[in-house]
Image 1 (cartoon, rainbow, N blue to C red):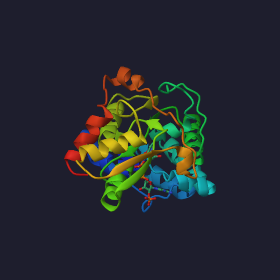
Image 2: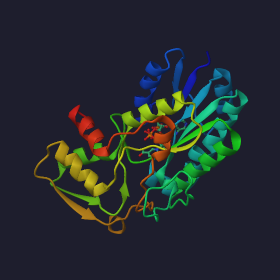
Image 3: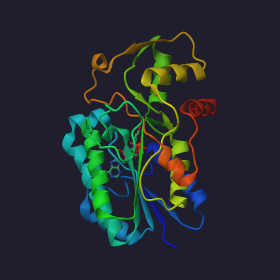
Image 4: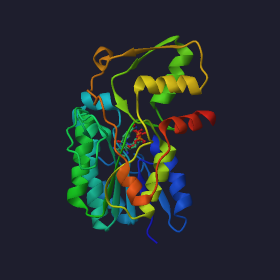
Length: 284
Ligand SMILES: NC(=O)c1ccc[n+]([C@@H]2O[C@H](COP(=O)([O-])OP(=O)(O)OC[C@H]3O[C@@H](n4cnc5c(N)ncnc54)[C@H](OP(=O)(O)O)[C@@H]3O)[C@@H](O)[C@H]2O)c1
C-alpha cells in the first residue's frame, strides 16, 4: 500500500498529527518529513522526493507561520507558502496523490459580523494571509482530489503559541497587556488532528473550516488561561490592536463557521474552553 506523507511533521501540529495518523491508518506507512528531509522552496528536489516516495496522500502542513515575520520578509513568505505549495502540487500530481493543505482564517478581512463560510470571499489583510491564499489557489488549480482545511489560533504541546506565551509571561511579570478587539476560536492541535483524520477517513474533498467551538478575544483567551491554570496575582490589561502595534494587520472578526464539517462527518469539535481546560489539566 502506498504511504501517507506529512510535510511539516516537526511543527506544532505535525507532532500531534503524526502519531494519530500512525494509529488510525495502521495498514499504511506514515512518513513524516520536515525541512531537513525536504525543502519545499526547492522545486526539483521537492518534486523528485515526492515522486520517489510515491505516496497515496500528501498532507502539507509546512509553512512560514510567523505572521509578523512574513510581513517583513514578503519574498521569503511567498517562496515558502505559495511557491512551496506549487512544488508540492507538482510532485503529488506526478504520482496521482491526493493533497491535504492547512490554511487559515487570515485569508479573510474580518469585516463580516458572523462566522465565515467556506464560500465567503477571501480578502487577506496581511502577507501571511496572501501567501496562504495563493497556496490554496495553486492546489485548487493543480489537483482535483484535494482537501483544504482552514483553521485558526492553534495551540498545542509542541510549539510556540499563545498559551505557552501567556504562561511564560505570567511567571515573569505581574501585568500583561493583551489585545481585546480581535475575535476568533482558539483551537487545540490534538482536536484538529482528530478532525483531520476523520475527514481523511470520509475521503472528503474541497474546503472545510475546522476549529474548536465558540469564540473569544485574545484577552478573553488570556483570562481563561490564567483562570484554568489557577494563576493568581497577575493583572491583565485589554488593549486595542492599533495601540499594540504589530507589523501585520489582523482581522477583527475571523470566526469560522464549522457547519460543513459537521454535516459531512457528524463530528463536532468541543468548545474551546473545554479543550483548553483539558490541555492545561494534563500539563502543557
Ligand atoms: N499556528 C496557527 O495558529 C495556525 C493557524 C491557521 C493555520 N495554520 C497552518 O497550519 C499549519 C501548521 O501550523 P503549525 O503551527 O504547526 O506550524 P509550525 O509549528 O510553524 O510548523 C511548520 C513546520 O514547517 C517547517 N518548514 C518551514 N519552512 C519549510 C520549508 N521551506 N520546507 C519544509 N518545511 C518547512 C517548519 O520548520 P522550521 O520550524 O525549521 O521553520 C516547521 O517544522 C501551517 O500550514 C499553518 O499555516 C496555523
